[in-house]
Amino acid sequence: MAVRSSGRRSASALLALSVLVAGVLSGCSGRPGAAAVVGGEQISVAYLQATAVDLAPYLKDASQASLLTALLQAPSFESAAAGQGVGVTRKQAADRLDQVAKQAAAARTAPARTTPFTPGAVEVVRFALAQQNLQALPNAAEVTAQVAKKLRALDVEVNPRYGTVDLAAGSVKPPSYPWLVTAAAG
View 1 (cartoon, rainbow, N blue to C red):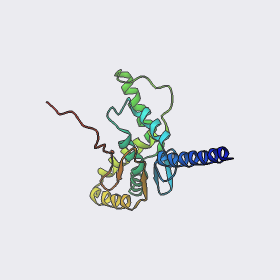
View 2: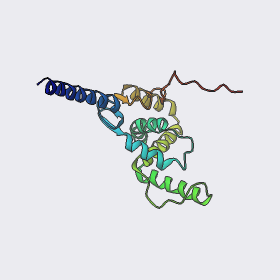
View 3: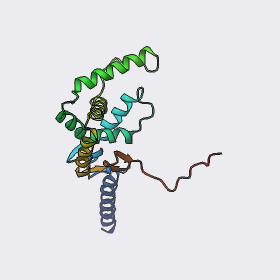
View 4: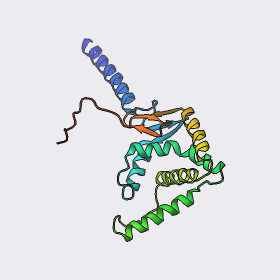
């Protein structure tokens, strides 16, 4: 009888520990697999990683944190660009990516593409083009201030694995690991 009772307690403790570990590892808003959640919409880790892999040959120094920042800000910038008459369609962004890929393949800095770009890659380029279009407007400072205000109002949660979000500054600040010591330059 005591053995059975002890076994049940061990099983219960193991189950409780498993639930706790799963909650900690999921990291973001109790949503397993989320890199970030914006206004209830999830950007999955898989989506972010696929975007990073897809763009790696063309954006050599782009971190997942910087790509996540672009994905978090994209809807606000795209909406503002459309409202100003300088919006960018997904097709325009995909065409620009295809153009960059062909140029990179011709220059032998990246392999020739045989598959379409992922939706995340297209979204990052769409964001960049919308941001570029907004910066070219005569009232760019005013529009950018409106976008920054909209970004500050967003309900955003970022998986701690990627850092902390500061959309007003336009970044996801990578996490710091104070127990890691960096080598001194010299």
